[in-house]
Image (cartoon, rainbow, N blue to C red; front, top):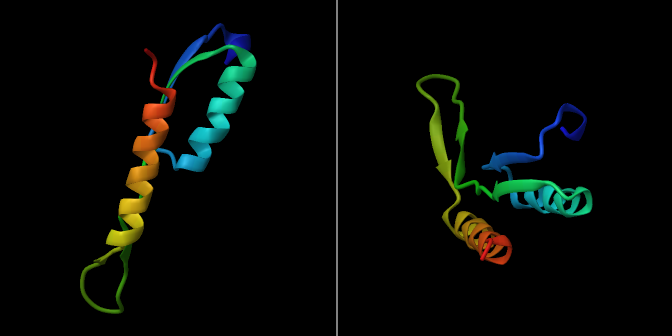
Length: 78
């Protein structure tokens, strides 16, 4: 991005581990970024016959959501 003159970018929705890695590079390179971790609340699963079915993971989703909020609070600009 820097080679092309981009100094600010936005990345929303990636998993927390991706956002953490991006944050490290943003700090190292001196870029400006709008980062926002996403979370996964479930998956869609196919069946032999009939439509796809949602498979919710509520407890895991809540943990991921809380982690995403903590990340946002930690890196939020004043």
